[in-house]
Image (tube, rainbow, N blue to C red; front, side, top):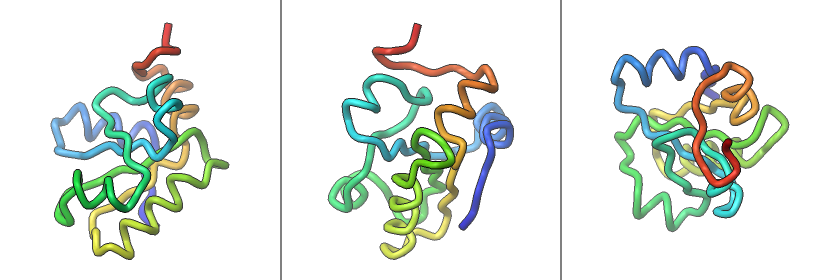
Length: 107
C-alpha cells in the first residue's frame, strides 16, 4: 500500500500536482467535514463514473483506525488503478496540522 502523510500531501497540493482527493466516508459525513477539493466516492459505480485509471488518487477517511480508505484503496487496485495512495491519518491528522477543512461542521 502506498501511504502519504499530511505534510507530504499538503506540499504536493501546494506545488500544483494534479492529485484527486477522494473522501471514502458516507455522504453525510463528507458534507460535515472534508479536505477542500475532495470528491466523495465510496462505491464501485461512483469510481467507474468519476475516476480514470491513469488518475493519481489519494483516498482518506477519518483517521488511521478508519478502514473505509483501506477498502476503497483495495477496490481501486482490483479495478486496475495504478496510482493510488492512502492518507491514513485522514481528517484528524489534517486538522491537527492546521490545514483547512470545509463543510457544514467546520467553524
